[in-house]
Image (cartoon, rainbow, N blue to C red; front, side):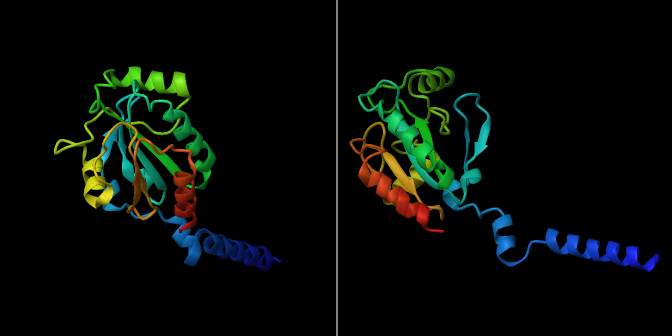
Length: 194
């Protein structure tokens, strides 16, 4: 009689070990995505200056945008947040980088900018510390995006679409609405690629 329970205990332990060990497709899903070179950078979060490694977004589709609070394009925050809300669950992340490079239209400090973005436009997508986005002193992400063929931003709310593989897909002028048909179409295509 003692043999039966022992046999079931051993069988249960074996099944538990087999189910716990990821193999094949399950192992690929369980392992974190490899961080592409473009994302191997750290920036401080806008709200609290906490360092954030961009590798946390590896395997996601990214829309990188330089922003400003006092620009004619500032209402695009609404479209960016809408895009993030609509496609975030599918793997899209909008990354905002405030900059004072154009027309001195982002003069505030980090907390002031964060409060403005949230209180005025309900921004919940990740925002990073204010930085330079053009020229030789541009932050390293914008330098690499420009070198990859996206060019340097020509004004506030210039946008770069980056695929899950960390490669630049396209760039868009300030005139291109973030929730307009061209960006939405490109985002959907990028999200469909695995």
